[in-house]
Image (tube, rainbow, N blue to C red; front, side, top):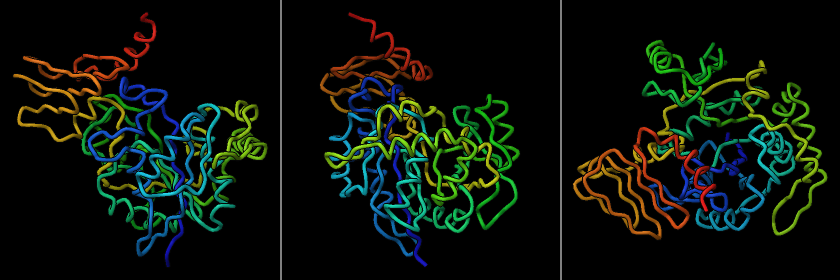
Length: 354
């Protein structure tokens, strides 16, 4: 039996750690980082069409209020049309999006499950991803299923999920959520087994999700109020700004998943990456013989293991290694790859410059 699934794609992130390419006007999901299409367009294309087991409905897109033109352009690049576009008046984290998606899904695609996922992730193995969705779908009728990523290294930048009892082949109850660990703890998780990275992707029945918002009724009720008082224009739904502002800004994991007894995890190996830093871009990209990743108007002379990118600005470096060098009309950054997380701080410094 074919399962109808409504993708709900969250495109509200700012991507400050990929500045100066990612900006408030055009955040990271609307850029290509290695592929021909943007992360947003790749995400939409990944959850379009039909397979033998899955039929995807036209997606629900949740984006920032100023990004309607970008959303439409990148939908076109993916060869897709949205079932609905919701433009958030301000960022409110993932719980509010989940509540709105569950409410809207009941009228957009009655009987469908909702697949809630970020617009800015890389998934290299689409077939494995679709297989994981199909495997999780029967359990998602009664539980909220999150997709865990099988870890291949002791990563300290992600939260972890400890799997519990098996509910169906490849789907487990959640034993516990673990915060981002230090290296020693992450190494222990890897050795022990049964842990997966928390990727922030969810499959659920809308009624189950709305019911489990009993753990955070102020989020659900605020989202429903904002939708009911919203207006539609230019092919988009604008939730009421005042009602939306009153919604608590909280992740779905904290609002619901860590409290509900109706959670499950489907561990999978799908070639997943959260493109959250320039060092991650370097790691994922095809490197030349010297380990350099060069994009745009850029060149490296006698250097190794660098990421050098020029957009609208010519960038040339010589005799350096293990650097991130990014130049756009918005700004220029130069820092060691191991300090890639400092880009957010550099953006803040740049904002204070004359």
